[in-house]
Image (cartoon, rainbow, N blue to C red):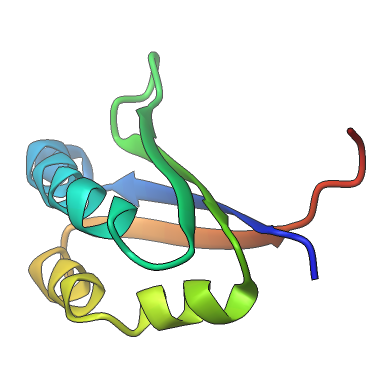
Length: 97
């Protein structure tokens, strides 16, 4: 299988943007050091600061699933439980070079 690209769109509640941003930033270094992580980049929309997007590439889907089961992801979900309007995760594959 080719590498797996993940697009994760997170919409914070308007009054929780700073908290969600801080929690997302905590994930960066630990995730980048995980087995199979090619890149893990956090973006914030220029016009809607409540919209965050993680652009991730993983060597395999299995390694991404291991990442998703890690403690730091569980902590993120617990710490932002009532702070997020929506989370959408898309698993993507490159179809062009």
